[in-house]
Image 1: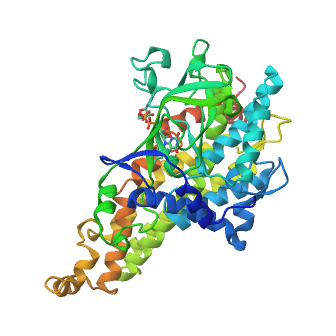
Image 2 (image 1 turned 60 degrees about the horizontal axis):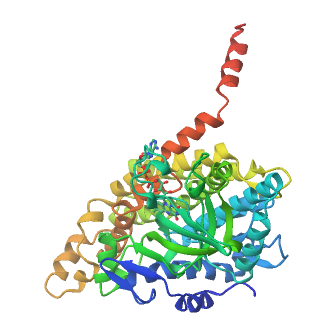
Image 3 (image 1 turned 180 degrees about the vertical axis):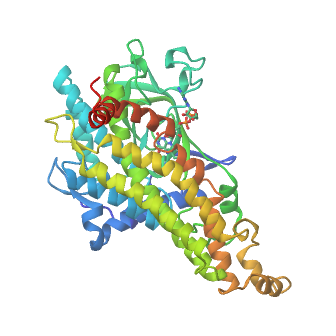
Length: 482
Ligand SMILES: Cc1cc2nc3c(=O)[nH]c(=O)nc-3n(C[C@H](O)[C@H](O)[C@H](O)COP(=O)(O)OP(=O)(O)OC[C@H]3O[C@@H](n4cnc5c(N)ncnc54)[C@H](O)[C@@H]3O)c2cc1C
C-alpha cells in the first residue's frame, strides 16, 4: 500500500475502538469529542502534508527494507541527509499545526530500536532485529501512525522499580508464555497515543541486573484488550468542550498538545511484537539512542516551529496596536529570533555531525552534544520567547472578552471602541487569543519537560564534554607545563 491520504487516515481511525476516558466520561468516538478530535485532526494534517508534492523531500522517504515509498515518520535514518530531513519535518509540522506531530516520538523510538536490536542480535544471537524489521515493514506498508511510550509513572523517584510500593508505576511483564508476554504497568504523558494505530513501548531508563521484569520493548495496538487511555484534562480541554464556535479558540483545529496516561492491565503482546525482554544491559542504550534522536528533533526543530508562530503572532500584535516601529519592541523580536535560530542551528549541527551507530548497523543517529544543546537552549529560550510575546501582546492577552462579544448588540459597541487601535478590535482579539494559547497555556512546562527534564541534558553535558582537553589547551597557550 502507498502512503495514506489524510482522509484514509481518518477512515482508519474510525475503525479503532480504544478505551478512552476524558474529563469524567468515556469517549466512544474520537471524532465526536472536540478535544480528542483536535488530536486526530493534527495527525490527519501530517498525512496531508505528505500528500503535497512540495513537501516530498521532507515528509517522504524510501524504505531501506523494501525500497518502497514511506512516510518519513516511519523511516530509519541511513545517512546525514535523512537526519537533516527528519529535523526539517519536525520544523514543518510544528509550523503547520501549532501542536505535536503525534508520530514524532514513535519515529525516534523506532530509530533507537533499529540500532539496538541490531546490536543485540549481533552480540547475543537473538532474533529481535529480524522481528523488529518485520513489524516495521508492516507499519510502513500500512502507513501507520505510531506513538512512542517511554515515560513510566515512576512513583518515588529515589527508588528503583523493584523498591516501589506499587509495581505498576513501571511497565513490566507479569507472565511469559509460549505465545507472548502479559504486560502491566502505567506510562504517563503519552502524546497522541489515543489517535495512533500503534504505540512503541520502550523502557523508561537504564536498568540493572535483577530488574529483568521491567526490561521490555514492544509494539502494542490501539484498542488491545486491557489497555486504557486516561486523557489529560485542563481549562483548555473544558474551554474546547464548552465553546460553541471553535474558531474562537487559540489554536482552532489542532488545539493543545494532547496526552494521556496509558494503563496496561494484563495486556497480551505476542512474541513477534516483542523487541527486548529481560536484557537489562541494553535498556540504557535504547533510551540514550532515543533521547539522541528526540532531543535534536524536539528541542531544535519542533519547538522552533512553535516559536516561529509565537514570533509571527507577536509581530501582528505589535502592528495592530501601533508599536511595531518602537525600538525596544524590535529588540525583543530580535531576541526571540536569536534564541530560536540558535536552537535550530544546534539541530542542524546535530544532524550534520550525526554518525552510524552502532558501526555496521546502517542506522544514523544525531550528534549527542548538539542534540542536548538544542533541547537545553530551547527549554530556557522558550520561556524567554513567551515572556517577550506576553510583553508585546499587552494585558489583552489574558484580559480579553470573547471574540463574539464584539458582535453583541449591548456590549459590542463599547468593546469595539475600547479595543480598536491601528488594527481592528476583532483582529486584536484573534491575535491576543492566539498568544494566550502559547503564553498562558500548557506550553511552558510542556516544552520544559518534553524529551526529558533539563537536568537530564545538563547531566549529558557533563558526560559528553571533554573538560580535561579544555584545561590542557588553556595550559598550553599559557605556557604552563603541569
Ligand atoms: C507535553 C508533553 C508531552 C509528552 N509526550 C511524551 C510522549 O509522547 N511519550 C513519552 O514517553 N513521554 C512524554 N512526555 C513525558 C516527558 O518525557 C517527561 O515529562 C519528562 O521526561 C519528565 O518526567 P516527569 O514528567 O515524570 O517529571 P519528573 O520525573 O517528576 O521530574 C520533575 C523534577 O524532578 C527531577 N527528577 C526526577 N527524578 C529525578 C532523579 N531520579 N534524580 C534527580 N532529579 C530527578 C527532574 O529533573 C525534574 O526537575 C511528555 C511530556 C510532556 C510535558
